[in-house]
Image 1 (tube, rainbow, N blue to C red):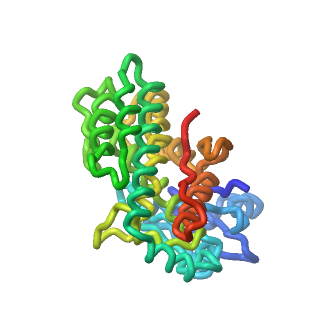
Image 2 (image 1 turned 60 degrees about the horizontal axis):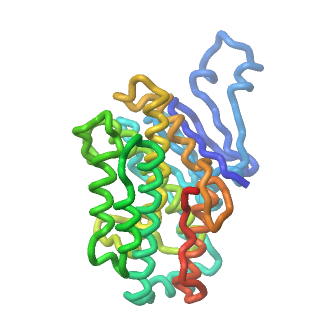
Length: 312
């Protein structure tokens, strides 16, 4: 079943009732000019088990501890945003799998050669997915070099093919913005990419926990200040799906200078984007679960190949 992504951009009161998330709107509750039936209509309930991601994007949202506990118990990724609507916090459960201790051990004890091989698979598929987006979304750009770089990726990517491909990719992805540079605080559409990647990161982190893995301990990324190094590794081949969606959003909207509610609504489609893993089409959120489950099997020595998404 596809899990729901819930976005709250207005003041709201979120509570728990019989394993249902209860959503109440304070403005409706305080309005004496409308009928009680309309007030009741302003209350909505959603089964906790149907929710995958919750985005809280308003300082006047109140959520009870009971609702938080129920969401985390069901492995829901709860994202909090700052005053600029940029996701800044992610609440995750402490336990997400019955074999968590065993899988932590496999992950911690993973050999360096295994991690290098896993990183090579990650980089190779990322470059191939970037090549597809560039070839299908930008007219007249040459992409044979990217296929060559993907084929040349060696264990651990010592030749840094990832950076070489990224430099070429970003230099050509937005031909109408010749000065574009991919930076977190850069010009548009960097803000769209930042928002989309934050949603994607939460989806990957959620599935890592569900697969009994530690999101902090990465395959390649390592940073003493980063609690989600493994999520940053695993999301790499998924990033081009966000890039493609951002291009489509830019084509559909005349003005993308500000991260409006309409633009965020488009980017919140990320969990249900169609992707293909092992020849089977599924929503991105489901595919991410297949990827993290395959990673757990690799750590346990039961498999050697990561199930990453690929464009057809």
